[in-house]
Image (cartoon, rainbow, N blue to C red; front, top):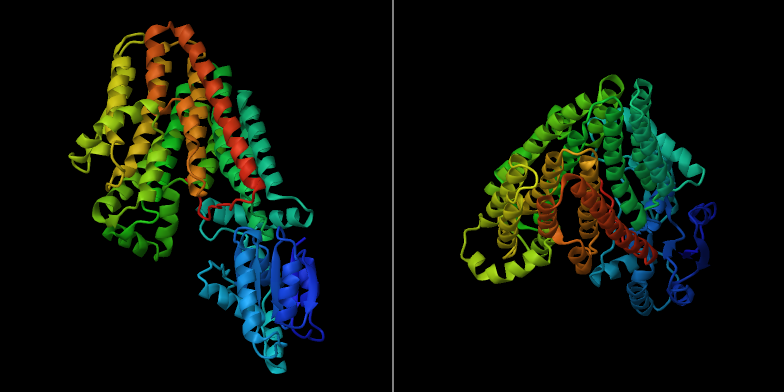
Amino acid sequence: MPTAILTGQPVPGSSIESELRSLGFDVHLVSGAADTETLLARVPGEHRVAVVDARFVGHPHALRLGLTDPRFPLAAIPGAVTAQPAARQALTRAMARENSAGGGTVLAVDSLADRITAALDADGADVHRPELGSLVAAVPADPQARNEARQAVAAVDDEAVRLKSAVKARDGFVTTFFISPYSRYIARWCARRGLTPNQVTTASLITALIAAGCAATGTRAGFVAAGVLLIASFVLDCTDGQLARYSLQYSTLGAWLDATFDRAKEYAYYAGLALGAARGGDDVWALALGAMILQTCRHVVDFSFNEANHDATANTSPTAALSDKLDSVGWTVWVRRMIVLPIGERWAMIAVLTALTTPRITFYALLIGCAFSATYTTAGRVLRSLTRRATRTDRAAKALADLADSGPLAEAVARGLRGTARRLPAITAPAVALLGGAAVVATAALTDFGGPWPLVAAIVYLLTSALAVARPLKGALDWLVPPFFRAAEYLTVLFLAAKADVNGALPAAFGLVAAVAYHHYDTVYRIRGDAGAPPRWLVRTIGGHEGRTLVICALAALLTAPQFKLALTVLAVAVALVVLVESIRFWVAAHKVGAPAVHDEGEPA
């Protein structure tokens, strides 16, 4: 149980002790710095501890934000400071210094908690200070100031602020105006009944899978039910994050589940639509796979661009300045957010079209909409990259190299090409990645199944991929290398399966791309959580993007179409088992050791 040390003389009528207990703290009252230091030393090292001034006046949610957020080892608000186990040593040092300086006397004027916070700042500790907005957190020095602080507390509705802060500051149009106005109340309902964000996330997944099952029936009633359930799943998807913010129940496992299940829900729904269409005699598996590929490549563009510029210096651009200017004009903000077809707009479109039209029309609309938004966002980022003067760091280069997912073959060839790569222009990496990928995709699409040319093109792709990563990816457009690799691998699988022209080949290809895409998403989430990329043994085991492309092209050249379908199925199962087992092991272990959670406060595309 976390411990709160309440320092100084208790104030008659103060509710601070009961408020701390309501937040789950075991409260101990002490009179001065010496007693505080003694008690601090007795608190078990694996427990959170907080030092709070007994004169504190403020909103309960201000205390909650300052003392219970699990994402920050050290946090403080006026009159209170807290440390998780990882930061206990820093808190102990600051406390010892204050006790030595103050001689252990009873505090009468200033706040011990605030002095400890100042000492932590002086030591260079990273102390989180939550934005309180209209919430009050103060340590009044006299009765008049206390009375004024209490009046300020009474003037602001703590619960209304808490509900408002449960909603993301930046969301899409559909989410902001059609979901969040009521989903925040569902989040509060869940919090009051002890439900966790992970339970709501799981409920959202189950609802989406049932929606996919309804779509797979191929009946009009099934399609209508699927559309309704998909919207319900999205409401729950918004609710889990709002519940996490409302109750500050953040966790490493929760962040991973939320991000992973979003992709699983959407892609499972694509498969359900394709199965439903097949029951009606319409084969749209190629469209379903194309939609998954396009959506995944869009995300890779987002992730790669953000990682490349995450900590870039001299990061200025006229294009970015224009974008910021447009964000100051109200109506352009919503238009720009809708153009990129974020998850709220996209799922609403899919749900409505599923209920009212056919799976083929739904996929056509999805492909056109996503292609337009991908062109818009990618073109804007290319312009920013070409017009900005930015120096990218070694961390960014490593992140892009990890996102590239190069296997042992590309790494071996790249070692021999390093000298050559250093002498080539800066545009070389994205250019050769694009040309090599285009070659293998075009060959798979334009030649007959079973011919040798896709295999030859895959060998060329191996060489160009190695040249692309032969030197650090620090160029202006080097963030395009991972998306080019993703598109080349996924589209090659799509076209070879389509050319096989055998029943079941495209569903098998869908499964294989889904398994590989999961590995690529998992890589992103690990990097964003500062956990590093997946272990090298995993990348080597599943071959890297160039190894898998080479193997698939070789299988297409050597096997008959039915045998190729079986090989795709076996590969899909094998890759899925390896990456899922390792991913689950990693994230469960990270959750157990209390690794920090990364929660996205923007709406993903």
